[in-house]
Structures are given as C-alpha cells and as structure tokens.
Length: 147
Length: 147
Image (cartoon, rainbow over all chains, first blue to last red; front, side, top):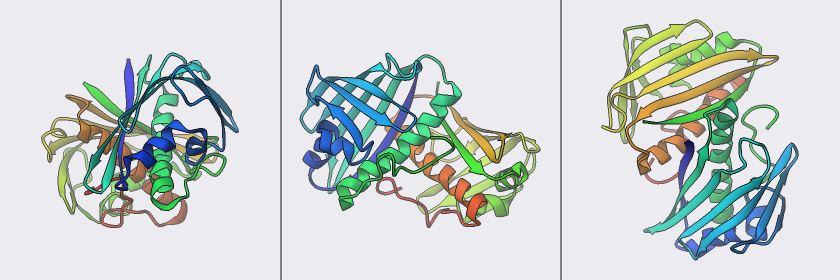
C-alpha cells in the first residue's frame, strides 16, 4: 500500500473556513469541481464529477475543524477502496492542512499523476480561503493532458 | 521507506529541452533555484541553495533524454541518503516526466510539505520549457510558511 501526501498552509486565523471548504457542497465546489453533489454528512455520499469522469466518496468522519475522512466507493478502479484523510490545525495565522490519499495498491503512473494534480487542487483550496476564488474543474490547473 | 511521486506532461516535441533543464546548471537554475552550482556530470556534485538552506546531490546517472538520477549527500537529515529519479518519454507532442523522490525513512510532516513543493517546482519546469520562464527560488510558489 502506498500513499499520496501533501501539506499546505492557508493564511487564515479561521480553521472554520477551511473546514467548511471540506464539509459543504458549496465549499467543495469552490476548489475541487464545480460539479459536486451529495450529502456532506457522516454516512452520506458525495459525488464529484470532472470532464473525464468522477468519484463517489462516502463521508467516514467529520470532526469539526480537526479531521475529515472519505472512502472512495466508486470511480477509477485504482481509486476504489482508497481513503482520503484531512487534518487541520492552527499555527499562528495559518491553518495547516495535512492531506493523505492512502492505500493505493500499487505506485502506478496514474498515482504519480494524481499526486501532482492533488497538489494543484490543494493550492486551489488555499486560494479559495485566502482570496475567495479557487480553481475548481473545469477551470483547473493542467499538469498534463488530458487531466 | 516511502516515496514522493509526481508526473507532468510538458508540451514540447523535444525531449532534449527537458533533459537539458535537468542536466545543466543553467537549466536547473531556470526552474528549481537561481542559486545552483556544481558539476552536472555523472560523479559530479550539484549544489542547490534556497533562502532556508539547501541540498548537495551527487549525479548518479544521466542517460540522454531518458533518465536522470541524483543521490542526496548533504542537506536536511530527512533528505540525506534519499534518491531523486527522473524518467522522460515522448508521447506525441508532450514529454512525460515521471518523478520519484525515493527512500524517505518515515512519512514525516516535512515529507508532506516537500511533496507539495516538488509539484510546484515540476510545474515550474514545465513552464520553463513551454514558455521560457520558470519560477525558481527565490521567485517560487509558496505553499506554506516559511517554504
């Protein structure tokens, strides 16, 4: 099992804003994909859709301003069964976001791609909270083709 | 042992340009850090310096337009002994860059940070080849503080 790991520091004194961007359909639509639907509650399913396809995630945990966890229940075969874990903590006037996309079966080429792409989406999350504007799909940063 | 993995597609029909950006002091200065010195030949040592510190890398392999490998011989303790491997291949009018920063002892928080930061530097490499301008330190993209 192999993991994608990332970390960004969001310049905000309010962890709530970052937590909301991870736990509401409106927030998620603002940095990951415009086409986000579903129930952002523990036990609910979130549907994220992109031009090339999408993912369904079951919300496994939402601990206010601290932790969010999703399990991938539908999408590309490499993603199904993996988990996505977010941890937040405050450090002065920054909210530190620790991100793990865990339990990939193999370090396939698609995993390399997703690692880079996740970084750009985390920068989109940071930008959404800091400036009010993220870069969700289909206005996302392109790291390759098609992506 | 854990690895940082990334992949970008550089829009160019010339793998040579990407290879040069990885195997010349001028090329490396154009996307990673302005302050790059050393010998970009197998057995040589490259010195990369950034405002917060730096890394010394021994060049382990340079297979023209295909593969480049460095071993970290000085720098932060978490980096020393790790290896950085680049693989290039042509896919139509894109050069695919597969990147691995391998053999971290533990998935520490600093590794999460470096993973995100590597992604921004790979985007800088892509930009350098595609547009002639990268974002090397100290004009790099900030993902946290200090970074």
